[in-house]
Image (cartoon, rainbow, N blue to C red; front, side, top):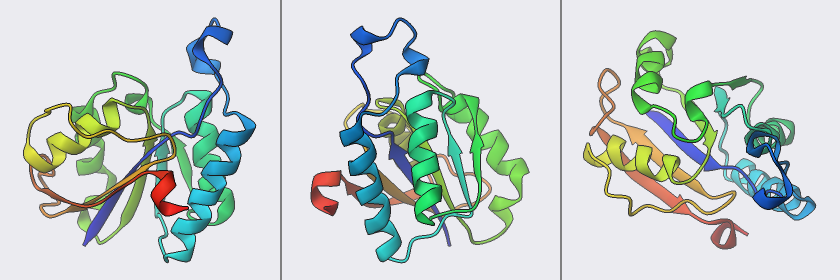
Length: 165
């Protein structure tokens, strides 16, 4: 079975303090909490074949923390995970990646509301803007139909850092 984990970036600096939202870093608290979440995932035996991340600094930093803790050996920036990214672009990547031909475990590091909306579309085929992913929170999906993931996934995990830690 292929598992897809959608992980929101950790706590970041205030938007008002940065003229360029793409450059907002994680706060020290955000780094610590993200590392704690990563350690907890590792303790549960979770490993990712690949981590795809939004190119924004706070998401890349989150992905690097996940990798440094030992959850994956590979991190790759993926522009569609930036705010208001396109799920169809990810589906096209998925269908061409080779990961859809085998059992694998992937992580997507991005932003809210996109991760919640993508999860809804993957599970129910449409967005209802009801799933909220907290900072450093995790959604886990089993991809049931590897050739057509939209509407063909099952939700097995929706947790905030507070519940993991």
